[in-house]
Image (tube, rainbow, N blue to C red; front, side, top):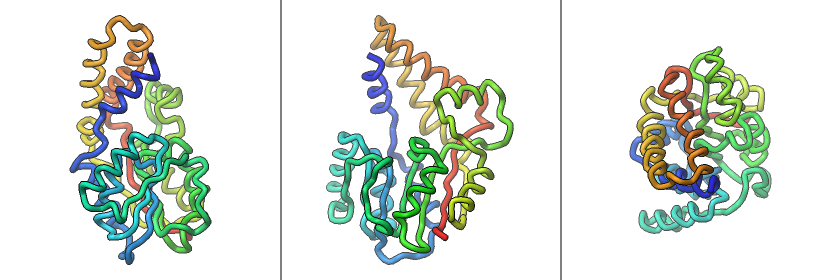
Amino acid sequence: MGTDIMSEIRDAIPTVSARRDECTRRAFHMLPPLDRPRILDVGCGRGGPTLELARLSQGEVIGLDIHQSDLDELARRAREAGLSDRVTTVNRSMFDMGFPDESFDIIWSEGSIFNIGFERGLKEWRRLIKPRHFLAVHEATWLRPNPPPEMLAAWKEGMYPGTETVDECAELVAACGYDLLGHYALPDDFWWHEYFGPLQECIDELRRKHAGDADSLHVLDRQQRNVDLYRKYPQWYGSAYFVMQKR
């Protein structure tokens, strides 16, 4: 049941909210004006950023993900928003996207680059960006150096094993052939209200639902560990946007 309950957890956590749209807008406004750009939203999920990018840019946005149910939901929401003519979906892995070189004015990635790794993503996606055009990434970060051993061990075991500090991420941006246009860390309370709080409510509900299922309860125990660590060390980790230009 472990795989099934992870799907239940994933479906229960909101990925679309006014506050998340506000964060997308702030990052987008770090870019110079572009005339109807072609944008690839990597790991788009249900498409909160995808639709917001379509509204902000007036351009074409391709949402790429491996979860067809999420892509179907994005397509439905695009139709309801009157954006179907400018928002399309592709079921494809970020490990093998298959687009020609220099296909996009902007590549956008919110909370997905960790699947491939921050440095690897910056290097491999660079070929897809037109000369002197743009990449924007939202990624988990350490908010200060030298995290407590308990926290560091938990992240290396499975949360975000490749996490860097904000300054280290900025150094990788330069090393991978980009100029950093701007970056910002999300507010201190963002991840409690947008992720860990809803996750706690989901865990509590699923414990009641799967009370007799040892495998599911084991998965929930691991998720509870993540919540407890965030409660204990909120000042140590969060996430940040990095907006960069291909050099």
